Length: 140
Image (tube, rainbow, N blue to C red; front, top):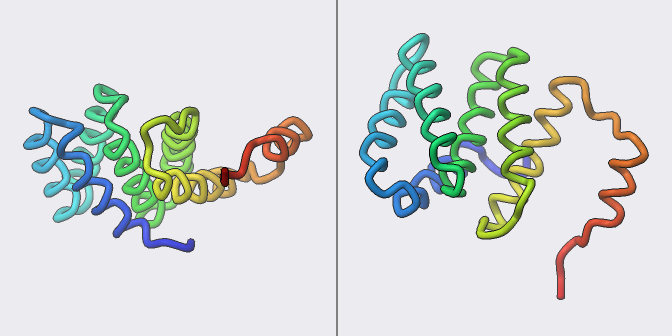
């Protein structure tokens, strides 16, 4: 990776305060529990964060945070479920770029590839190759 997912998660989480409004205190509590525990307690906090993300689909920084911590889950416990969750979250995030941080888009695109590779999906069909070729790469 060309970035540190843990640092990116911290940055995205702090950016999410404005997005979450009255849910911020709950998010802080869940994140603290997730970060300072292991096992069932951490997993329950992680699931709580993902549930909050589902309720707040326009909280783009919080969505990015959840993708970054899903990668942390992958590194802690390398199981298909975490790769599948990461793939689902990153695809939803990347479906629209409107209002999202260019840095988060770049990092999550890289994570998306890693989630796919972890599931053995790195092979691209012709349609995917054509889509990437036709997608604007930035600039003016």
